[in-house]
Amino acid sequence: MRESPAVAAIRAEGVSFEYGRQTALDGVDLEVAPGERFAILGPNGGGKTTLFRILATLLKPSRGRAAILGHDVGRDSAAARAVLGVVFQAPAIDRLLTVRENLDLQGALYGLRGAGLARERDALLERFGLAARSGARAATLSGGLVRRLEIAKALLHRPRLLLLDEPSTGLDPQARADMWRSIDAQARRDGTTVAFTTHLLDEGDRSGRVAILDRGRVVATGRPEDLKAEVGRQVLVVTPRPPDPDGAPDAGLRAEVERVAGIPAREAEGRILLDTPDGAGLVPRLAAALEGRIAGISLSRPTLFDVFLRRTGHRFDAEPLEGFRGAGDAA
Amino acid sequence: MIAPGRAVRATLALAGREARRFFRERTRVTGALLQPILFWAFFGAGLAPSFRLGGGIAYGAYLLPGIVVLVLLFTAIFSTISVIEDRREGFLQGVMVAPVPRGAIVAGKILGGTLLATAQAGLALLLAPLAGVRLDAAAFALSIGFCFVLGFGLTSLSLAIAWPMRSTQGFHAIMTVFLMPLWLLSGAFFPADGVPGWLAILMRLDPLTYGVATLRSLLAPIPDGPGGTAGGVAAGAPALGVTLLFVAGMFLLALAVSRRRDGALPG
Image (cartoon, rainbow over all chains, first blue to last red):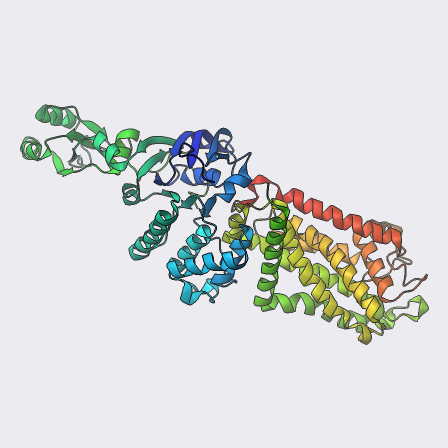
């Protein structure tokens, strides 16, 4: 039954999409191996939701191609849908139906019935802590329980790939942790590939691999630790003192930092950054040399924020450029 | 390729969902049935004195088939308008990514609405004795069967209108300027005898005229006479044929409208 390991869970080649004249995706390449936990990380408007919709078979790419376990999402969407479990940002449940009725309806849509359906359904209700509420109308569930029902629903037919759009949105930290525990347990049990979009850096950090999406393009792909190692062992950030209302910005500051550090610096969003192996030694020297000209110096291990900044030249939470908004991201 | 049996089961499950929802929203249940019955009670009693039909038919009896068709139309509208909520609330896109042909999804929605419409039309038919229409079991069964067919067409038409809509307000506008006139001109409300020429033409062009004429002949068989040709068309095989063409055409229209790829995207 199983395809050889060579068949990627997700393969996207040059996927592009436009909403009218607005570019949402511009030549996205992506490859996700079976069994991975893969994050598609990016700021709002980066194109995540558009990419999600293409992978979920709801949109056809205008150029390029995308395949789920070897099944093209456009030409062979029925086969792709059969191996795909999808969790949308907006709950796709029927609030007038009970928890159990929602799962039964999902089963009928995925060709499950009878004892097999009842067994899978009851096991998921138990595992996702919904058993006690199985006869309750979905409208009466809390936000956290609704999300769990959504995920249980998507897992009912044991998909090979679970695809989630911003699954943490609207959940408190406790509910988020619960949700990921349930997903990970289920994924380990069935060997399910999990791919999800997120704008939360720490969720990218806790994934096997991450693709960083910005303004419709993939700006980095890899294991979070590899991407961060590329930035350097430590990142030193010098924040200049805000200029006086009528004064000019401190133009010579970057040159001074480079002179003291002896290595080239980068500038981004008005701050000066150094990728340095010896931050601890540099901080006191810079502090002494730049006395009165700076507001602060900070030293940290690089994060995906720094990876993003280095690859794009702008901050992760910066406003997206006009013309690069994924529809739905704005909602 | 999806196995046909699986597509049918998906259709039936979606139709069952429509029925469940309907009974859990009590205002829909009562509204779609009670409003036409009130129409019948008020218009039937109010217009009876000024209404003279050949063959001694009381206006209440004349109006009954029209009221049954109105129940079909209202229930069709109330059940298909929910596709707008399905889309807005996200339910629809969850169904769209399931390995089920689009036709099976559309058929499920239409079948569910049709079953509800037929059941409510059956309840409205129970008014027959009050209207002075003698209805035996065979005529009742035939009428119910015909209501199912006509209801399928009206639910399809209503779904084709509702599918691309992003708000229920737009649907209400179409209901007022298109669906209600469709009913008013069908001979349900007044016969074509003696109306101005332009109106007679409109009534002949209205596909619902042929359905109302067929139902009227099933309820109270009148071989020839003003009651039997109320919309200006005679009941019989041609009228039944036009109705079947209308039903098939509306289902194909609903399928075509739903095949638009972006149909699942929220506003």
